[in-house]
Image 1 (cartoon, rainbow, N blue to C red):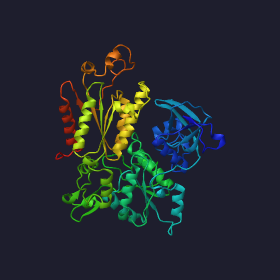
Image 2 (cartoon, rainbow, N blue to C red):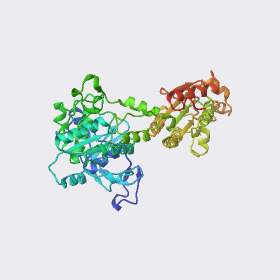
Image 3 (cartoon, rainbow, N blue to C red):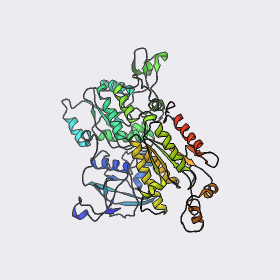
Image 4 (tube, helix red, strand yellow):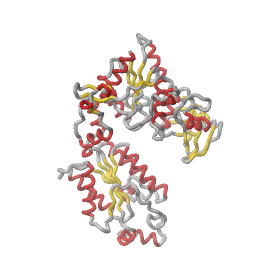
Amino acid sequence: MTVSHPALPDDLRDLPQWAPGARELADLELLLDGGFAPLRGFLGGADLASVHDSGRLADGTPWPIPVTLTVPAAAAPGDRLVLTDEEGTPLALLTVTERAEVTDGVRLAGPVAPLRPAEHGPFRTLRATPEEVRKSLAERPDTGRPVLAVAVREPLHRRTIAQIKYLADDLRADVLVLPLAGGAHPGTLIRAVLAARGDLPSGTRVVPVPLAPRPDADPAADLLARAHVAAAYGATHLLADLPTGETAAPHDTAVTERSPLPLVVPGVWGFDTSVDVWRPADRIAPDDLRAELTTEHLMELLDAGAEIPAWFTPAAVARELRAAHPPRYERGLTVFFTGLSGSGKSTVARALADALAERGRSVTSLDGDVVRRLLSAGLTFSREDRDLNIRRIGYVAAEITRHGGVAICAPIAPFAATRAEVRAMVEAAGDFVLVHVATPLATCEARDRKGLYAKARAGQIPDFTGISSPYEEPEDADITLDTSEMSAEDAVGRVLDFLTRGGWVRDDAH
């Protein structure tokens, strides 16, 4: 936690501050603007237990998902905490009513009061509070018309577009599309939804909403969370079309009874090849029925740079998908080598960088020793500083990857948790390949060009990986090399073969 911020009122400047993570910031925005009505703060133990057991708050009010805040430092009921965005801008004041020790820190509960609105980046002109949207809906010439909400985390393809048009006509409803932009790559989702707007009913409004995904939530709870948010934005109905493979039935009584608005279930639809339209599957002859592309098939087409069929998605949406997910041979990539000092990882990494540059890729090398002299100058070799060094490498690699380059990293990176952090950072921007150079310790020590192992054995270097500090072997390596059993050329060949088979290097590149 930090203290003092010049933008705060005098009576709040000495309060502790905390910048929540992305999901908690998204929840905070919905708490503050009414998107999570009737909630006014982060939930305490009794409410959380009740939500888990029955999908209701402790007082019986239907509520489907936990809304929590975890901080690393202690706090007590009655304390006040300033919540900021990641840049330190104060957003809200939390008055703590409850604290509980949890695995990753201290979970705090209590009401939140706004200090200033969240500052959005791209597409800020589309953003609106629930109150603003409800007011605009009330000002329509025909205020009695229903409002069909479509709350999505995926682009709108032709099947969903056809369902929206059918249901909007059937209900005589206006359409409100709510891209759930609280997850990764919100700009990509919003652009893809806007690209489909020309195929949607006239007057369709698009309003991004910061409802973050919860990987541990079941589909029914996620659907109900969408329903609560849609109702807060003034919708009267919600399109309850779950992605393929999810089994929750939105028409089940247990779900519909807890929904704040009617859930409209379009049923199973398919593409009718006899007339080139999407329609309910029970109206299509079996020989003429074509199912929607699976997510896996779509990703395979994008990875390969192949054409996305027009019957599946509009051309404008396809262009946005290709821009956000270029073919692998054009996509940003991090190849992250890990292994003991003297394992040969730097030698293989340098040779790989040369080979990829010869094949036309833009390559940046982030070798452990070079990074130590520049990016991480001044850091020690304590556990904390070694982790910070790897995080810095990961941050730079993620930015290189985000902009379509290839980052080749070759630190020791002995700890699995820190490697996992780097993988997550990079995969939010592009692709990540982990190479474990698993050369045995005895071979690494025998090479010892710098005399480091000898000094570590003599006690002159504390916390030396492999001697006085552990090396946690990866369980998630994509490639494993042992340079005691192969030449550097063969090792590079193994990595190149993997990258070529994966599509990151073209077969015909020379």
